[in-house]
Amino acid sequence: MTSQGHSLDSCGFEKAEKLMIFKKFWGSMRAQLNKLANFFWEADPIAQLQYEYDQGVEQLKEGRQRIGKTKPIFAQGARRAGGYPAGSG
Image (tube, rainbow, N blue to C red; front, side, top):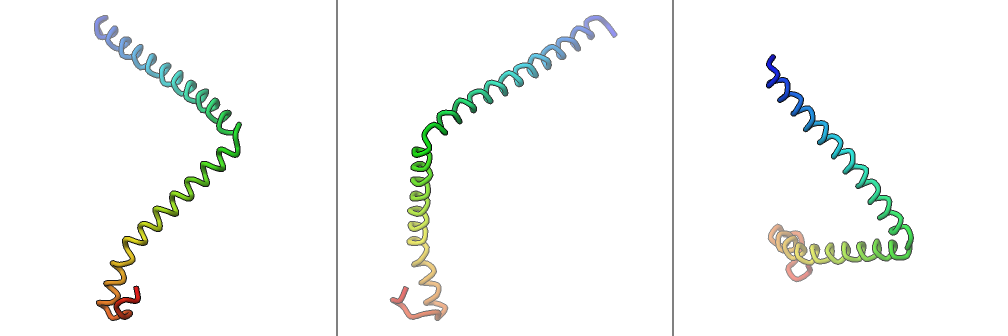
């Protein structure tokens, strides 16, 4: 193999090595940022409970809206099928 081919192989190896080092560095930085975020998140348990409560309320609102939109459709289908009289749904 020529020295030129050998230098191309080592160049590719160096790039791969640098990429691997960068990935490891980035992973460790993400871990440190995650630790910091967890520290602040756990520092205020009342805020965390309030956030979870607010999410639950939003999910209930969305569910009620979906039920409100689909209930007339099912009632119409049931009336057509003779399930129950019109006006009771």
